[in-house]
Image 1 (spheres, rainbow, N blue to C red):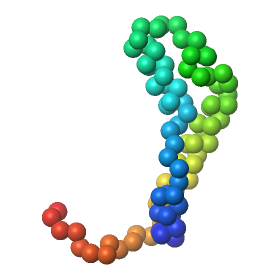
Image 2 (image 1 turned 180 degrees about the vertical axis):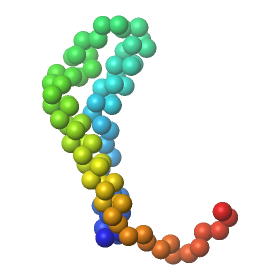
Image 3 (image 1 turned 135 degrees about the horizontal axis):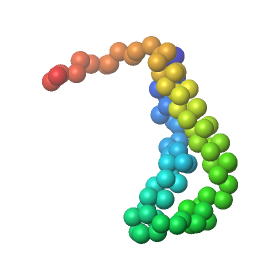
Image 4 (image 1 turned 135 degrees about the vertical axis):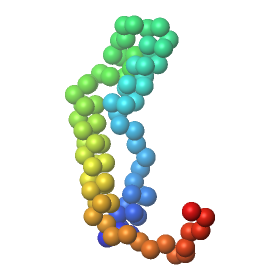
Length: 83
């Protein structure tokens, strides 16, 4: 199971939680001095859709962590020296 869990994790696409991306855009607008931010400026037309994507993203991360916790350790091919 360990090899499967690691292989699956390595093949997974890199993603950023959609709500984090929106938060970074809001912070950028605030740093530029914009106190009132239009939803269209940050690409947030449908907040409920982005929230659902964010929840699915979080569940996916939790499932991955659970799989890694259940996985058996894999022995290293050699002894790591220097620690």
